[in-house]
Image (cartoon, rainbow, N blue to C red; front, side, top):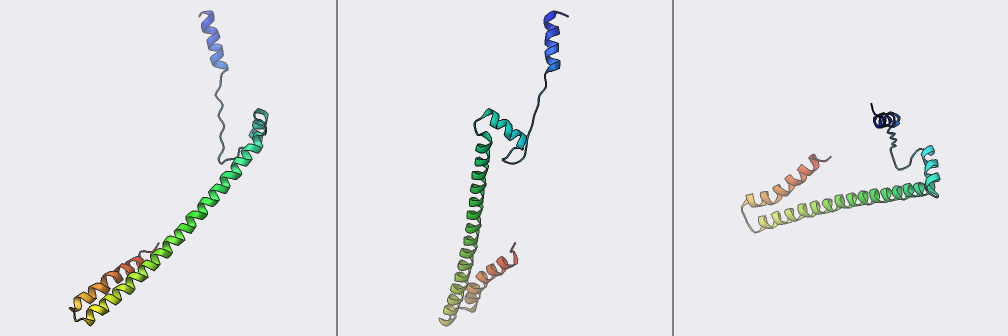
Length: 122
């Protein structure tokens, strides 16, 4: 073998790939110390970033919960309004002498929708 090939073989034998990972925004304390050595206040900056991220996540989850509650409330009001209007319309059609099937349809279809919503609740 030539001199060049032998030195390349030695270099290849002495090299290694090192990988480290962690789960979550905050690395282990030993790694935080290394960040402090590389970046001024590196650990403090990482902790600050994690605190801001947590605050953002909590605010986002709170907004989602409020929107879900609002959506449910609007759905309940819309369902109640539909039921009341269908009963009023059925009563009116019966009063003016329309065929009984019209009144049944006006009350039956919305009521079946309400029953279906109650049965299919999560």
